[in-house]
Length: 82
Image (cartoon, rainbow, N blue to C red; front, side, top):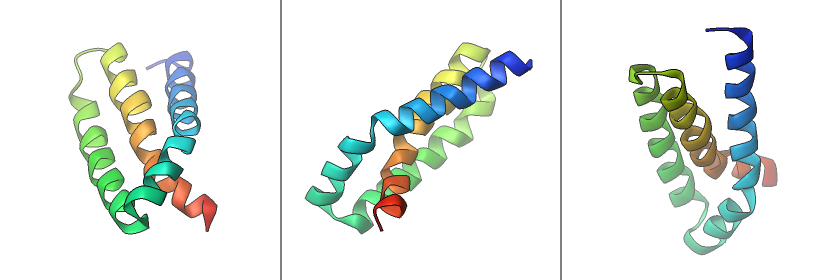
């Protein structure tokens, strides 16, 4: 994997995490801190577990960057708001 692909991957993950932050705070207010953290952590773990089995770099960026970044914002926003 080239440096360019790695930088794209981390950039997409950071943007996805930052973009879903307001949605995560709404979910925290609706469902509570514990439920949002558990659901976000479990779904993020599934996404990160499946990403090495992706057939090409585009699917890997989608699984790790977009899905993983989006779901990790559900438990990262809790730490930032504390």
